[in-house]
Every structure is written in C-alpha cells, then in structure tokens.
Image (cartoon, each protein chain N blue to C red):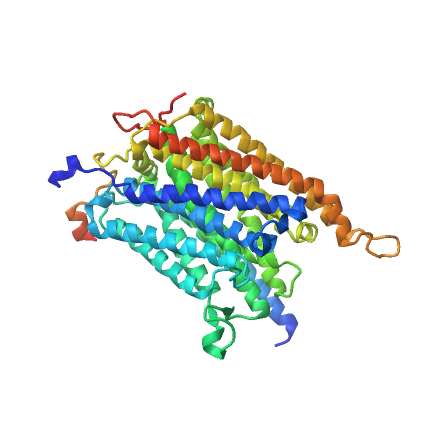
Length: 71
Length: 488
C-alpha cells in the first residue's frame, strides 16, 4: 500500500471516529433528558445532596438493606 | 443506627490538612516572589550561595505550591466534603480514621523531605516531576492511602448516589495515579550500572518519547491537580455557601465526561514545532480548542447557579472569591486554547506569556477557590465565626490587583519578546539578540514580582484571619446552613 492510500484511509478513519464520538456525546445528552422525561430518574434533585448534608438529614436516595441485596 | 443522634462529622484529618495548606502556601508563594524578583534584579541570586539561585529555587516554588499548598488543600476539602455528601462520619470507622491520619503524616514526611532534597539540588530534572525514585515510591504509598480513604468512605456511605464532586475527586485520584506512575518510570543508575549515588535515576524513556510522556504528564497534572479537584470543590462550596442548587446537574455530568475525555489528548500542545510526530502536535492543538466546551460548561454552570442571587456577591466575600475564581477559570481556559493554536504558539512559545497564563489560572482560579473553601470550612470545623469580614474584603481586592498586575505584565512581556525574537531586517537577519529582549523586559519583571508580592501579602492576611478565627473567633451555637457567619 502506498503512502497516499494510507493517508486517505487515515483521513476517513479520523472523520468516522469524530462522527462516532459526536454520536456518543449526543446520545448521552439524549439519555439524560429521556430518563428525566420518562420519570426514570430526576437528575436535578441530586443538587440537594450538597444543600442538605447534615449527618441527620435524610439522604436524597438512601442505601437501604433492600437496595444492597438488589445490588 | 441508634447512636446516630450523637454522631458528628469528624474533621480531625481535614483540620491537619488545613494547617498544611497554610504552611505550604506561605513557603511556596514566598519562594515564588523571591524568584520573580530575581528575574528583575539578578543580583538577588547570590543571597544564599547555591541554595538561593533561581535554578535551585524554581522547582521548590512549583513543587511547593502544587504538591504542598494545592494537594493539602485538596485533601482538606476531601476529608470535609467526602463525609458530608456521602452522609457518613469518619468516626464511624476506626480503620478509616487510622488511614486518614497515616495519610496526613506520610504526606507531611514526603513533602518536607522533598523540600530538603530539592534545596540540596537532588533532582531528576523532569519538570514538575523532580523528585527522585525513593520519594516517588513514598508518593505512591500516600496516594494509595488516599484511595483507601475515598473508596472506604464510599463503601460505608448512606447516600446512594455519588454527588458530582465525588466523581471529580475519584477522577483526580485515578488520573494522577496513572500519570504519576507512567511519567516516573525511572532506572536507578547506581543499582543498574554503579553510576551516581544510590538515589539517582534516569528516565526509562529517551529523547522524543520522554518528551511526549513528560508533557502528557505535565499537561494532565494541570488537568487532574489544578482543574478537576478544584471543580469538585466549587460544585460543593458555591451551592452550599449561596444556598442555591446547581443550575443544571445534567450539565455538570456532561461537562465531567467531556473534560475526562478531551483533557488527556491535549498535552501535545507543549511540543508544537518540536521533533514529536506532526499528528501528535495537531491532535494536541485541536483537543486544546475543544477543551473550551467542557471547561466553560462547568464555569457557566457555576455562574448560572447564582442566577437571581447576585446580591450575595455584594454581601458575602466568600461568594466574591468563588465567582471570581470561576471567572478566572473561564479566562484561562480560553487563553490556553488560543495559545495552543499553532500559529499563535509560534509567537507565544517560550515567552513570558506562558507563565502569565499559568498564573491567572493558579492565582485566580485555584488559589481563590482554595482560600474560599478553607474560609467556608472554618466556622463549621471550629464552630466559630470567621474573624474579620473587612480583612477578607481587603485581601480580595489586594490579591485581585496582584493577579491583574501579574498577567497583564506577562502578556505584554510575552508578546514583546515573541515579536522581537522573530523580527528580521531587510536581508532576513535577526534584528535582535537574546539580551536585547531581556533588557526590554526588565520593567515588566518588576511589575510581575510586585503583583506576586501583593498576592503573597494577601495570603498572609488570609492566614492571619484563619489563625484568629481558630484562636479567637466568636463561638457559634449551631452550624450555619448556608452563608458563613463572619464578624465585621
């Protein structure tokens, strides 16, 4: 294979990889918004972890023995 | 847990690291001001024989502020924030308490030994990785202890979800572990070939390969020590101090993954126009420009967290420190990518614009955020009001003036220097010799050193305020929810 072909393949590889990464990024964003819309998870409530952080405050999502079993 | 009512967060390790932050801050910044004045007044190099020369002191300044001041500040914040966002006290685990204290004492021994050996001139000569192999092994031990502390606390947590700051702390831990190990792969010369003292070593990599590993490390030290843990802090301290939830938690997650992916590829911009492969240089340049997005994602998220609450900026100096820190983060993460563009770099490389860029990031973003963090923690750890709001305001303005003097003088000096280096006469001969540029730059060096001195004086004001808070602050009966209490 000559150098020119190698360079051409590299360029195709580069553009495809960039598109692949952009797709991953936007898919993650879509996943965040879809989860919120379908009620699977409310990300914004996690801000409360910092605001209500006294030791006797109720955890935003507690680790219960049940959860541990599930995990 | 029945005894939960009596349970409190245990800040003993956080307090130890707070004292270390102040101590190493003073040492590191003092040396920084001395070497800055040495640039303006070269005779200052001869004050203390070999121990006072610029070349001996420069690694002490960089290691002192990065691994002394900054790391202890990061550890202090971790031992404070970690417990609170996981809702678990270190007092609940004797093991974690022992690990925490061991972590602190080994850290102190390592850093103090580093100070002594660097003064003695024992150095690997790799920038920001000057420590010799026995100390590198000790660094690995203390890092592993920190890992035990992080994952140990996560293991006994009550809060199921890890708050965004935790992600950034974990990334700091993993990122630095990987970078430090690979860049410090070294061959002890005495044991391999009988050359040098027992503690001497050479890098396992040679030539261009060594340069590539060095700057992959060097630039990501900026990422995982100057940026990632400081974002961990601002995501906790700004919402907590202002009482406002993070503007967009989703944006914080997206910025996190963006930063993690992009940062690791940007180090090549330190080697533009050198012997490293062209594609490494281009990649370094491109990723540096892309880096604006996740960096500004976090910074804008923080500024928007203050939406509708800008009155607090006037009333609370801690908010002022943090908002300015975030603003300086935006400035330096725009400036860095601009410098990484090949054609700009052709002018900027090796000039004083580079230390100017580093210092608007470190003094404005890192320093301000660390001091704000310690100010926020003090009333909660010691149950006392902050000693003086007026002193804090004065410190803020003095240091801000100092930073502006620092980076503006270095911008002018750097661009002047770059233009003079490339200037040619009509026949293509270089118009200036190196010493011509040095003579022109001396006034800017004086201005920079004085800006640094302002910042150092401000740091003494901060240290005094902290000392008086701890020793003579007005006692408070209950922990403040948001705004930190302070005496006028």
